[in-house]
Image (tube, rainbow, N blue to C red; front, side, top):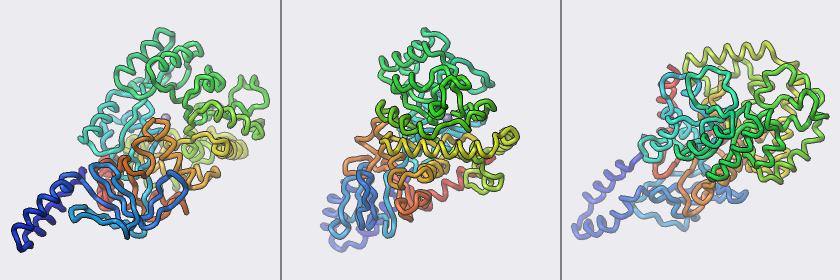
Length: 487
Ligand SMILES: [Zn+2]
């Protein structure tokens, strides 16, 4: 749904009809035409959380022209031209558009219908104005181009390459991966993905260390970042040395083992949540080693996407069946996938580790996030939707909440979904904060997110570029996308 200002156009005609002197009509049209052709609007009497520092600017008027923030000033001192569309922000809060730094599409999970466009709309309706898609596919590059050309409405996309893997043990129906088993493969893959237009190189698993080293060098040559998992054949010291951007805090828990040769240095990072031997190491993990770990990540300048909600609510202390069904996400999962997800969950729960180990795992994951934050590591929110029962858009708000559950302040949590991802993606000169001259990626909230981070869900409007979705538009999108996806 592209929001234009046709309704305003009618207002202009009505206004001119009532004008008595034709001369004034002529002058009025001349002076207003310029503003009219620019898609301009103002959010009036709003509390602005700029995210440049921890502050709330009260009773401001934010003027947007052609998708750019033109001014932010006290409402009492702001004069608006007649042609500006005015949005009432009284009692509401304006924050920068949110980033989801770790998202996938249902299409990757074997959905035969391509629902990329629908999921992107759903993300936007949830306040996400930038999304990083964490496994590459030609259809995702197309999605990126479609948003850019405004053929689709949705968040701006950053699309990482198909994931580089050393092995592919799963069915190969949907090819979002590339096998790299030699240094030649690695060089070719990186060069090809650069040419195809991917934004970064995605590492997954079973990659041999010499191949990893080649990937890192090739990516540097092509001026691309290396992002993603840290595999058990690479391990954390090599990833730190490469300054790889790390997802899921992969291999962080392993550094807390009393002796790195114990269980071959393997604990419950990432895919190891499925390994019985890995869970048996949990009672031995040493929380006292977390500060040194955090310091080493900080010193390397590495950005980390913990995806803690995903790991905690599904593997650590799983939600009950009822909790899953009561989440808004549940109504958006395609019925065929829903069945598969229940089956998967059933088999996981049957083999689950004892409660004491899982409680320690959850405690350690939260402590790692907290200490990383305290050490000054730039954290980023990533939902990993639609893994398990998370769905595009909604799941990001759960991850924001999980940052606060780990001990971050609501302001620090908001930084993980605005300022930090913008800096990592090198978009900070044009988005991530509410500043004059930046793009109008904005979310209008009914309640203050600095008081309760759950208030990021109280969406009253979303602006992305020069399209504005009001609460009704958001509601319509939520209904429309539900009926398309849940089939
Ligand atoms: Zn993922």
